[in-house]
Image (cartoon, rainbow, N blue to C red):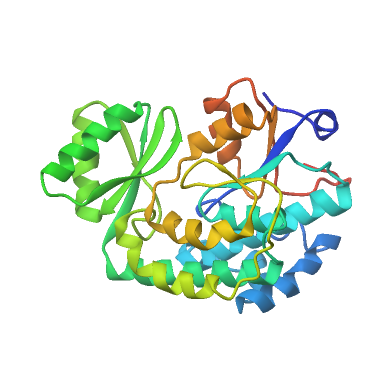
Length: 316
């Protein structure tokens, strides 16, 4: 069920941010004349990348690169959030969350991280994950329409057969992402087809959220050691445990775990709605993936997607 901005004023809501895969060429075109575009210089300084170029002119092929994909989605989402919170004047959310990379956006939005530190961490994370992916022939695939126990059985069968395969994302009751060695994912696709399952290969360069990303952990931990996390911040529901966290001191342990652990997105949404009482979820950033997943997890929760300005300068 969709909801307008005006309707949100009177009800508790969560703000969620998308992850890698939401990027599109020209994501910044709608924002370049907006007040929130001023963030681009700060994001560029923090990340060491030309964020304006990334959001305006880089090609779809460029944005498939892991580090550039992550930076572009992080930047586009933060610009949209700045507009929504500072210009439009959105009421204070009850909580924040983000899917994989989006967790970093959520931490900045929640006041846990300064913008420059967030950009620096995303750049370090993307570079480390790209290097780890290049060293391992990994892949990911979404299994659609099957409950978790059926997907878990499929994965376990492949692991017993000696294939490196894991569950990487628990996205909704009927969408689970598997990841591992490319050969293992190919075998999973074939086996899934034989079982009547829909298995869709994802356009990513590695087996994210599995043990094949373990090499990215140390570079990320080094970057985290220099980050100025706030002692306390607005509630953020973490990917790795689907629990509410309010202390900046938690994230130096949670974020490296996220690299090699499944994203418990269904659990995150249930925590936002059931434990924290959010009756609406706003997805801020490119795409509608998280809004669609929310509708499948909690059909009665209202959703709104914000990734561009309308002609009148209001939320689109």
